[in-house]
Amino acid sequence: SLEEQAGRLTQAVSVFQIDQVGVAVTEMDRVTQQNAALVEQSAAAAASLEEQAGRLTQAVSVFQIQAGELKSNVKPAPWYHYSGPI
Image (cartoon, rainbow, N blue to C red):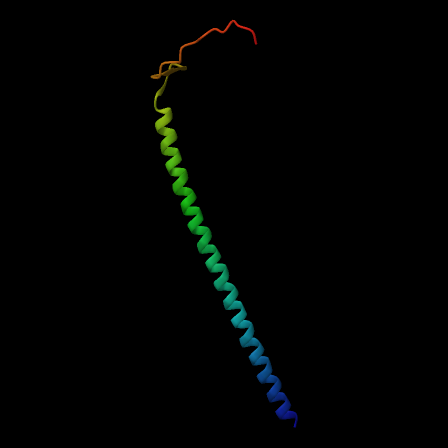
């Protein structure tokens, strides 16, 4: 009968819609996990940059700039003049 066919069609549409919701939830879960991994990578990169900035700050702390001149607490290496053949 027409009513039975309409009922089966309605049921098929409902199953299809439920399946589509399942697919969407699975995709959202995948994207959420991917985002979580990216957050972890970003946090690790930020920690690494913070450590590098600390080392750089320590490395340049030997320099003092006064009145536009660059002064250093580090003594320069001795200068040797080479006059031999090249």
